Length: 546
Image (cartoon, rainbow, N blue to C red; front, side, top):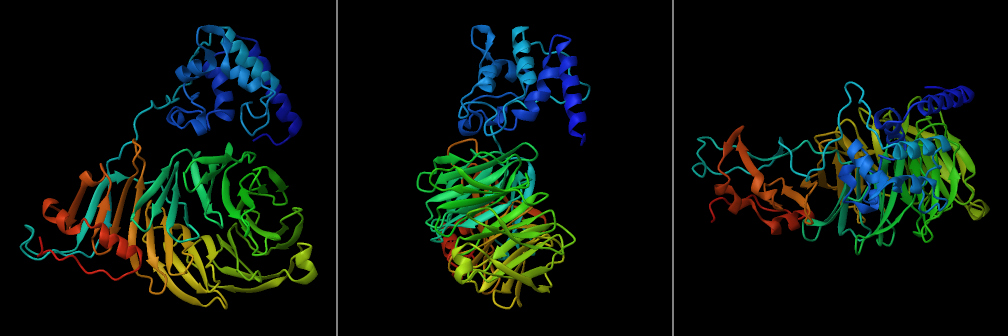
């Protein structure tokens, strides 16, 4: 990395000068520009997602030539027109500084000279061709407690059934969120948001018009909007608002120059805060979708952000090993909590506004006092005293923290494959839930009865908070059609799934395949899934009934 600005500028000028000395080619001159500024969004697989790509692909020589030239006009370029536009709403790259004049000139000369391909560097892989999304071929094995009786199947000694689907590996679930009324449960993974209707035990919608990783998602307090934050590392942050009634894209909030890692609505829903790897926290107007303020006081990635219950201040956590308290109206730093030796990945504010809890690569949970009262509250000031305590946390990093709506529970998700519940008043440990995989994300239902977790294995699981009982496993898959691809399964073995997922299911017992025909009629049961999602006790399958 070149750190000296004058040296960096000189090297950039030298590169452009050498490029101008010869006729430009795609591999030598144009591909580096497109990869740095354009192909975050404009790639073949995103062409059908017009909200992401505008229907333009630039990630291969063939695609770049097709996208750059105007049909029938060999020397006219749509691409050059877009990068030169003075209209900020039209100019590319969107929500980013204009391309350097030298880069625009290079693109123009490349088109004018015939858009030559040149010679690809040794070892450069070609861009993948566009192909329908399809289920892959690695087994996903989902355990159940269902045990068929002797005689139903060929096995002499019946055991517990495992449901098997050749659909892996799944992208990790990195974000989960309940809607305010508790009916919807959303999960986010790479390029996909699946919104489940818990009343029907099936997805209400799958959203694919998101850019890259989905790192966080939140419903607005009135439930009318879903905010989705993500993007491509070191390239572009992505922050989108969707209407939860129609699932249409309402707005794309552009400005972050690196991935958005956390989002939070203000209690009144009129503002949205976002934390990014570009080292900033931004606050957006919920109506105009304009950025109201940018806080750049962190010196490294900002992992998490949370609004205080009165909406006057924010808490943010960072790779710079600190938590900061920020004025939500002016962006002024009000306090800094420091003393950690590792990245602080997560932060949460108790609903009474008196406590901030943080954690991260140092897995202990640190409780801080942060009060907003009297005249201080009117001016948006927050006073902070030293840390209250460090309590034992997870065995490995803590990825997410949140308080239940009533403040009685603090919930944490950890790299030690557990979700843990703590007393929201005194921090005492209540329960440890083994999730079976690294837990990246966690959510608590509005009534505090249910916990949802998402992890490295690509599975979202619903748990009963009072007992830690595993209720349902929910899987969403990329789909090539309009209908979502999905699978829902209870621990008792009841399931339901979409086509073609349903037709690809198989079962094993003690590692041996068993006939699916003998099981489907007993186990495919939406009614049992709905009951399980309500937390009701459900019976084991009665394999004697037909």
